[in-house]
Image (cartoon, rainbow over all chains, first blue to last red; front, side):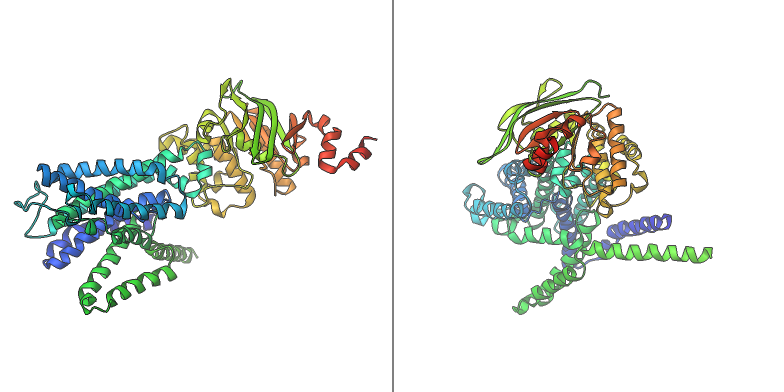
Length: 333
Length: 247
């Protein structure tokens, strides 16, 4: 056991150092773009994971929170000149409140009905913003181009600062989730996922905890919305409320493995490069072959490892542990 | 911790559409007492449990705990007040370990993890499951699951504990162990309401028995009185048999 723990610690250190240092040597803007997308979707996957993986509420409408967050900060910046970092925080708070209010009726639904309701939510938000003149309706908002720097949350010469900001967000959310996993909150979340009736019989107010989960998940997702708005410097409903965002987020988390911290990170680190690279290499052929490869890859994993990539990791760990034990037994004999 | 608690049920009535599932049921149970609740299939025993613990709303009557009216409170509020239950079809948190299952219960009184873990370990020791602490609940045997369910309820530190058929499906030896555990809980001052199908298991340990038939309370008394009660015999075995026994 000690060996396994030490290996895990070494692997973690290597992963952290690699994620900090390796990007410095990547100069191609497209590669930098992929890195930014990987960390962004890792954070989005974690936010989904809190709701879907721990509490068991499968959301396919995260774009509603994502888009709302992007609009909050962009509107404040464009119309009132408010610093995007303030908008970033406000986007988190407002989408969390929005998630809470939406959760009041929606968390009463169980299983697939919850999923369907969230799909509807995403679509409704998109139509709403497409017709809302005040925030630019279907044309959206262009963010003013200003001097680059951390204080303006804009970087033009390199995409790497966005990557490091995203990485910081990922680090913070991982720390939060590690705390959550070991606290009452995490235990109660899992209990609700496993069996709502048992949870209630043990004194858990399931509605309250579901609302907490959806508020946290929505808040983080909203902040990611601000991040993408600052990255692409414009927001429009078709882009920010796109149903593809909702599907990709859920896909990454499920593909990586839900209900644990590593899963969504793995999912994002593997799925997004495949998606972006196949699109770049083959997307222009007009045959849709990039989507076919992407789809085939997902189908293969689903068929051979329904637990997602974390299932693969667990198998390897179990095998290593068994080998260590066997070796020890051999040594004793 | 639980001296002098009392649960009083007065005239509880529950309808499912046209079906009268519970009709004016009244009884009470106190600390240090085992109340057995028996009756044929469909008599309304589980419905009564669900009404008392807030999982179903009653259509009439009241439930009072220590003088406080808790009728139609939410189940989690009733639990935090000190009235806990288990389920007829055993329900545990399958994907979590035994210790984690009990910790979920223990968190009710200990918001922080370290004391919750200690309290959960203490409960596991009491029900004799400490050596299984790290096993996933889904991998337990049926008797172990039933025991775990009791442990989870106990971890919420209840004053009244309602056990719904916690001995069904157990072998005679396992049932005897379960009876022993129920008895020791009573001796610690808990009030227990035990729904049971297995008469042999429950009669020796019950202090008082109430009998439900078609939603109506047809008898209440000591186990000896109940087994010779003609209405009970006819409810269980039919009128013909009842006449033969009485004569």
